[in-house]
Amino acid sequence: MTAPVSPPRCLNDLPTDILCEVFRALAAADIPSYPERRDDASGNIGWLRLTHVSRRLRKVGLSMSTLWGLAITHLPIAGREILGRSGEAPLFLSLHQDMPNIQFYLDNLPQLMQRAEHVTMRWSCNSLGSSFGDFTALDGPPDTMTRVHSAFRGATLPQLQFFFYESSYVSRRSDTIPRPSALLSFTAPALRLYGGDYLPIVAPALQTLFLLGNITTESLVCVLRHTPCLEDLSCFNCQPASWEMLPTTTPVPLPKLRRLHFGNQCEAFLQFQQLVSFFPLPESACSWPKPLSFRWGGQDTGPEIGRALEALQAGLPAVIKHPEALTFTHPFTVNSQPQLLLGSLWNPACDSYPTHCIVLELKRHRREHNDPVLEALIGAAHAFSSSVRTLYVSGYAYDTGRRECQVFGDGEPARYKAALALFTNVTEVYVGPAAYRLFLLLTGSGEDDDANTIALPALTTLTVDIREIRGIPNQSIDHFGLKKPEQYKDVHEGHITKEWFAALSWMLCKRRARGYGVRRLVLRGQLCHLAVVEEQEAGSRVTLEDIILDDLPSWTDEFVDERSTCERSTDV
Image 1 (cartoon, rainbow, N blue to C red):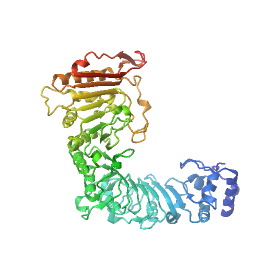
Image 2: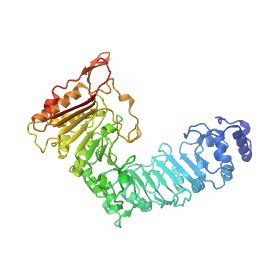
Image 3: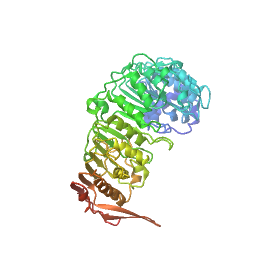
């Protein structure tokens, strides 16, 4: 049975206790079922009995806004009776500003938080606003968020184990983030996981800290000082504090830290590395499914990223301290950037990235910022060019002119070429369809190129592998859980374009003539046809031409043909 939108009038006149008994009777006629975890899900009376009315319940769920507000108007009144019947059962509490009868929750929030075990709060600036410490309110009722914070500010929450707090009502400018001394922390001795925006907490048993909103290194260190058992730390928007404001005490120890994901400014990481003692990291910290990762934005330069990576290198496990390979992953969406993996050698034919690696997540910014791919490449060269010997550039067979499918698509060609020239020990390169512009960089731009300026001057082996590489071990999705984008599949999927193959051929010929020729060329994958796209009034027409390899052996000392064929017609 599903709760009606408008309850029968007869229910409105029943006493609270009798109303609960009516719910019990209705539940007996309807098998309890747990509804979808959505705020707009229709309420199931059986689930109401299971979580709210039954005398034998062990946990109470308060996340069904339909049951508590819209569908049954008496439930806010019956709330005290239902909570009383539940005894000391821990609460599952989910609050947001658009839920019905929000005042009922705010009035009882101090008592609810004392019994809460699992809490989720989401507040938006569309409806709420206030000040908390030095936070700046945007709009909305001036006392709403103050009432929310007063429920746990300075309090001890004995049963709280999970807390996710997200608030967009405050200004996200770094200069409005309050100093720790301006805030009164709350204590949660049983808290295991905290996520969302920054709140000052004392959680001696905390194992996972996942911070999405802005926080300064000063505030972060103050939180970490009270989380000695922390194992997994993710902080993606850490802002550097003034060095004068940073504590001068001994670094905060995090002896159990196993996972670290940090961003988005290099200076913030350098401060973090000096103020927190988490070295040496275990080998598992650089392993899938959650390897060590850093998110760099367009405001950081290559030398700054290089200094941050050099500071990190001292604490890396031996298996990753001197990475042998640099991998450019392929982007999965229009707005995504490739990731850079610094790690061990791997075999693209095995369809998985290196077992151990450091992930550099590159965040797209406005045009006036630096190209994050280029700056990360320069930073990786400054820190690890002496050990990197192999370069991997994977990707799908997209149109070569589409910017989102090009690994080297945004930066200045001269700077990209100079960055690649820093990798003087790279002797082997594995390329896929996304490497079109890499060929242009490897070709050289003038007769004055020498060993100091030509990209990858020590390159001797080139493996061209035209196949789809999923990348993540034992998964068919990427690092963010995004499936392969169906909308990007072209008519000639699986076949490279004629322009792509021409760029490869010209690069091999040009480097050979300039004394930097590729000694060993290996062709793998679907290199049987070339796609030729003709624009017509009725749309694009794609034809497939047989590939001709007659000239390739003359541009290399050793030619290895391991290609596969397809059964497609030459007229698509």
